[in-house]
Structure formats: C-alpha cells, structure tokens
Length: 315
Image 1 (cartoon, rainbow, N blue to C red):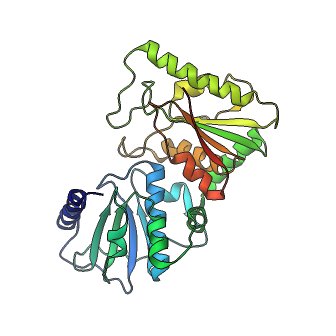
Image 2: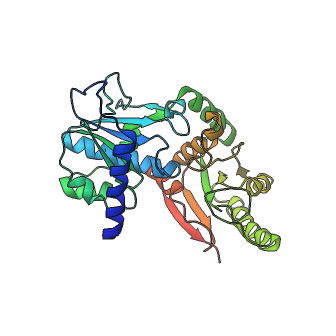
Image 3: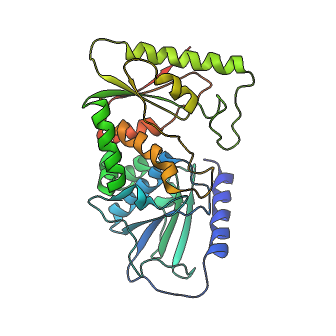
C-alpha cells in the first residue's frame, strides 16, 4: 500500500463528507455504530468484495463492542436475498445520521487495514470497504475470528432465496462437487468494466474448448459418483457445459453488481444462488488459464463452511 494511495483515499473521504453529509441534524444517535455502506456513491466491487468489506467491519465492531449495521441499497436492497442470522445488522429508526458533526467516513479499498485499527473516534463510522482485513484485525486485538463463522453470524438466505436453493438441492442431490470458471468477458458475453474479449473467434473457441475439456474430465471421474456443479460468468460456456453428462448448471444469467446501475433485484438472484450452492459443495475448484481471472468468489464461498478449495491452472 503506497503513501499516495492512502492520500487518495483520505481525499475521497473528504469529498464524500462534503458532498453527501449535511450540516443539519435530523437525529442524533444515542450510541456509536459503524455502518457498512453499499449505496452506489463509490466503487464497491462485486458480491465477494462487498461480503469481504462487511465481514471485516463486523469483526472490527465485535472486537470493540460497537454496534454494527449495514446500509445496502445498490443496486438492490440486500434484504431481498439475505436476512439477519444471529446478529441483527438492520438499521433501526433514529440510528443513522447523515450529519457531518456526528459521522466519520472511512474509505478503505486496497489497503492493509492498519488505518482502521488506528482509528480513534466516537462518531458514527460510515465504512466504504471491499477488503478482507481479518488477519490484521485478529493480530491487532489477539482474536481468532474465522471468516466463515462471522459470515454465518450475519447472514442467512431470505425466504425467496431459500426456496430456490431447496429446489436446486433437490435437482442436484445431497452431495456434489463444484467447479468455477471466471472469464471476465474474454468470451465476449459478460460486459464488465473495461475488460475486452479475445480478439478473434478462433481464440475464444480455443479457450472455451480447453475449459470444457476440464469439465469433461472432472465430470467423468468414477470414484465418487457425485454430480459436478459448474458456475461461470459466461452464459455461452454454461450452455455447452449443460450438455455434458454428470454436470449441473444453475439456470439464469449472471450480472455484475457494480457495472449495470439499478436493476430489477431479481436479476442478481443467480449470483446468490451460485454462492450459496458453492458453500454446500463437498469441494470447490477454481479452474482457468493464465489469462483468466483467479476469482476469490469461490474461495470465500468455500470459507463459509470450511470446505476444501483448490485452484487449477490449465496449460
């Protein structure tokens, strides 16, 4: 983490303070809270990045006895998919303040987390972060929090999500393995930021076939008889995977959370289905070539229940 990046983040905090906070008080919180902010006013990243930021802030609050809350309304309300588990993170009436006299904005993206551990304030914290800083927090306070345990304290599927997960489990069976392929628009069918597809159709087909061969090899292994759940950000790839015997593909289209603006909330259902189905697999593999993105999405899904995770690089 460079000095210039820290200065950049401090400047962003000042801009957010003067742009989004008001001079007048509508309410004054009775106790300190820290609020994980996912409101579209800054870059948040995809689902995994958002989870990392929220879990990190929850750990920070748990160490210090600070009330933890989530304000998540971009590009959908989080409650459409997730509800509180053992800890209620929902904002109550009168808890949230938009007054600069009562709030301190912290912008933490790509930082080690030490700036948060050194924070000294009694104000309400508005936290914009997308990093997993749990190791830094544990070392700072001598705790031994585990990411998956904290995640499960915070979240469980909403009724709508749980219903669809139950249907998928009926279809795939009780035990299955999982393989994840993250193309980041290399195949030209998943617009994401400024990532460009491979230049020629021949290159795209060659990459797709290499990954399909890996799926066939895994799905054909006779030693366990379990189905292979395959997830990907490429709809065209999944269409071909669905024709391979022994595989299971979740219907629907994946949409990146930070690239499409406000959408109908249901358009993001598949991302949550993918994540929670991965958490229940017997094992999770992230497979790809050197040009493909080594996604952390499957790694953090595996952390939820502590299941084996591995990366496979195709030559």
